[in-house]
Length: 189
Image (cartoon, rainbow, N blue to C red; front, side):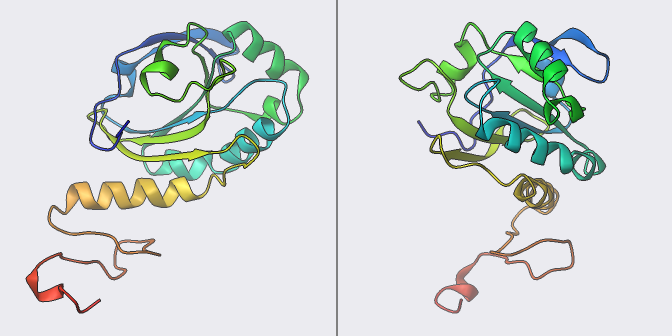
């Protein structure tokens, strides 16, 4: 399935919010108006997943400074998310909500439900109109590096604010070299 440029499917799901230490509902409507990083992972109480979620927490402040919100998503229930938060040193550090897609509808609609019934290791960066701008999907044993999402959000914001311009490889900040695709660049890069 081609994701880029598609609108995130509508959803309304239960979640555990560690900042409130309470259960909340998160919907696709809640994501509108800000950049969002959705980090899907296979399961709570596993091995690679807590390292990824902790790494995302380590980069959470930088993403928030960019105006982005972060959510972890798995097919575990919100009750299991709470239990994991209460029993894992790594997960107890989290400040961002963990969404439960226990009915597997969102995971299925995004075509990231694996043959065992778990979410694949997928990251979606979504713009303020809920349009998917980047997708990363890794094999189950390959953990993701969360700080790349900072650059993806920065580049996405830059391109959205500067139509007709593009961010080349290794672009990191406004002021770095950008590209204005056109005939004058053909064969010169």
